[in-house]
Image (tube, rainbow, N blue to C red; front, side, top):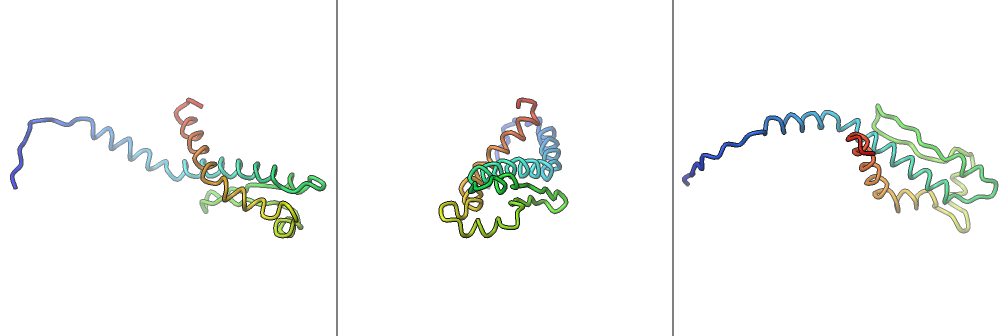
Length: 122
């Protein structure tokens, strides 16, 4: 197989590769920022969907970030949250339903916000 050299010179790839390397180095931090923002959004939505008898359950939804483990813990901090989640006659599974139903949407939206903030356009 023969090759034909067109004499075209390509420039700028060194700068492009340097930019890619820089962004790759920031990827874990960016991913955690996206995770935190998405988790906060989902917990807010779950609190809205929570059954409300006294309002305490909705107020006790939380996000705990564990950046060193690259995880977000979400939940409702009451001793009866699991029982209500499993057995409520009309709202059973509210937290899980929010996470599964809105999770990808929340991650996409959080990604847009994080990157816009980084660019200074948010």
